[in-house]
Length: 267
Image (cartoon, rainbow, N blue to C red; front, top):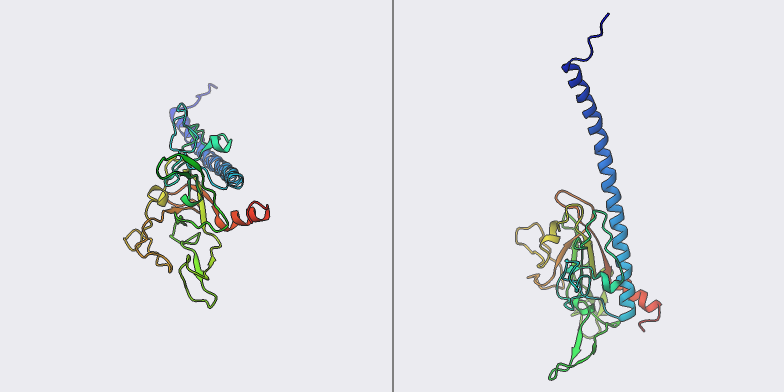
C-alpha cells in the first residue's frame, strides 16, 4: 500500500503548532533575559554609587557629569566642570568602564546629576581669575539644587525640602539661628539608567522644573518651600511601569555625611 505522505494542509498544521510552541517559549525566555539585564543594571548602579561615594570621601566634592557621549572624543568620560546640569557618568574620573547589559558602549544610558553645592567648583581670584583652590563641602554644607525624586504615581521617594524647626517645634528658616535640620533622605546625587529603550522616560525626560499645579499630575504642596517650585529638578524612580523602564538610585546627604564622620574625614 503506497503512503500518501503529507499534504499541504498537514504541513500547515504542523508549522502552526510549532509556531505556537516556539511563541510560548520565546515569551518567558525574553522576559527572563530582560530580568537579567535589569538585575545587572541595578548592580551597575550600586557600583557607580559606591565609586561616587568613595570619590567624595577622598576629595570632599563630587565630580561633575560628563557632557560627551562620543568615545572618540578626548573629553569622553571626564567631568565637564559644570555641576549645574545633568549629564553622563564621568567614567574616567571614577576609574570605571561602562559595561551595559544592552551593549551600549557609549555609556550614555547611564545618567548622573549632583547638587552643585557638593560638586566640583573652582575658587578663583575675582580680579585676576587665578585658580586659588577647589571648594570642599563640610558638615554644614546644604543642598542648593533641591533634587526631588518621585515614583510613577507621583509619591515622593525623597524629601522635597529640609524640615527645619526651632527648639520649641516652630517652623523656622533653615539658615536662621537655632534651626535644627531634619533631612532623613535628602538627595545629593542621582544616578539612573535609561533602560532597554535607551530613552529617559517619565519625569526623567523633563526633569528641569518641578511641576506644581500645572496639570501634569504632580501637584505637590509641601511646606518650607517656594510655592512656585522653580529650580527643583524632579526625577522618577521605582518599579517599571507603562512607558517607564528606567532604573535609578541616589546618594542621600545623611548617609554620606554619617559615613564621613564615622571614618573621621569630617569632624
